[in-house]
Length: 156
Image 1: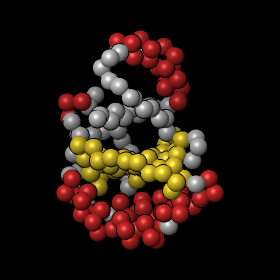
Image 2 (image 1 turned 180 degrees about the vertical axis):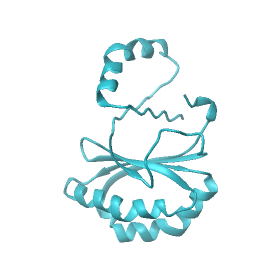
Image 3 (image 1 turned 135 degrees about the vertical axis):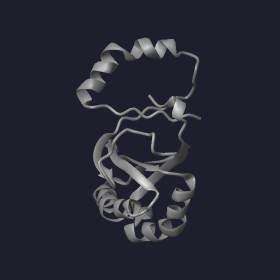
């Protein structure tokens, strides 16, 4: 499995790429992958510091895709900002991240870490306690995610 993340300067640049170049590039890649899933998220806020799509200082990426109950969306976003974001920002191995939103109460939490060991410390020490405090179980209808070991040769 491969995860490909693209960061666009603006929606106008994204729309221009889709209109002018996407189909040509996609046809050149036909047969090189199967079951591609594409989601487009709007940046809502940064996690820790100003997000930069720079991966040279990170070894691991944690991606969480959350579908939130419609009546809990406002609470979920508030808890990301007031509970989860400060907790991740306070973890020594966490470099930076972002919180994004898509239509249909879907959210992306992307965090970059110095190493798997640093991420493991954060997870073991805090996640259960934070989930209870944020009432995460009541907010989330579905959660998928992955730990991504970064491959430097794939960074462009």
